[in-house]
Image (cartoon, rainbow, N blue to C red; front, side):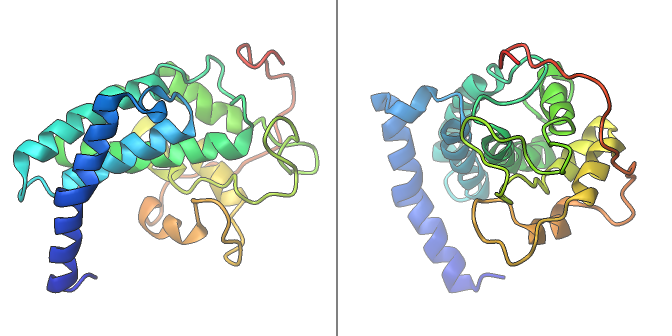
Length: 220
């Protein structure tokens, strides 16, 4: 919990430096402005969360940043692959979805707007594909920008989507693979389950899928 002084200081930094810098980058067309991968979700999503936090203090600035974040995230959302998967592997899919969820969950809670994602078939494909992207040893499939030894593919934010989309099997997948608490690489940590997972949340136990999964946009 922030003290009153800390809250004021953080608010001032967001209003005087953070959001103006973000909007200047958007106006300039910095490289991340149109990024459809994890950096797009990180920068637009992070700015969107910051803007939501200061709406009462700087409503015009916040509204401008929220609208810019929504526009920027469209590049990420519109490039979610049909059939799911991710060109950089499971780890960077996790990073992208985690940043995206941080903004969308907050926006949905405050305004009811989910950017159309709860009904988006490619969002569903993304979470469905996670159930297939482990090998027989229950480690991530080693390709592109991920190896089988990393722990940076767990996604506690999936619990939120599991509730919104009525998919207890997504929750069961996360239940089956809690991230070791000692692992500090990446961005999604096991402690996040305390706020993403509801008590007694419906969950279907994960079983290794049997069959074939075709990721059309991955080419395999």
